[in-house]
Image (cartoon, rainbow, N blue to C red; front, top):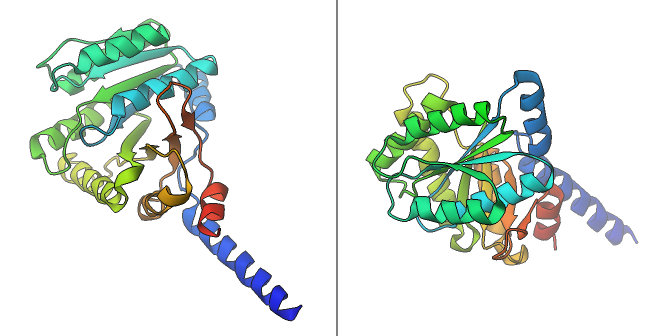
Length: 250
């Protein structure tokens, strides 16, 4: 009996410690944050999506759009990947499927300026949220990292979401750290904006992917806002600290 009591006490202590470690600094209540900005500042809530090439960034943006639409929000998508051929067309397809407005200026333009114009257009059209797609970039590509830092500096988005692949494990943690380091280096700001939300794709089962998720939350203090669990717009889930802790303690 006493051994059982000790075991239960240790488990509870471990659960409490992990919960403290993995509780993010940033709010995970996206809808409440959108409502607050819309109501108090009378402007659209702006989210920038960034990440390395080929992780499902545009698809994650579209899934986030569907989630916000379900909760009654008017969305504007902004095609600010002016670098990769086909990026604007990909977003056009998503916008058409979801029946939302898309702001774009084609290719070869300055992404920060396109984003600024998109936000201005969103104000005019009374959109609640602007979802800004950016070019996929390897974390050591200095020109593209500088471009991302400029977009953040010029537009001061409400959230910067990093999209990473659950399958690559600690590589995703390294990518996230490098993105933050570049944002610090290239913003020329004593209080630079950093990644403040994470979306993990290909997270179809939590059990064997939880390590990378835990490392990301712990190293950045920022929440996993959503995980992608399939191919359709509906396949986006919220992940709670409690779920991560329970998965670790199984």
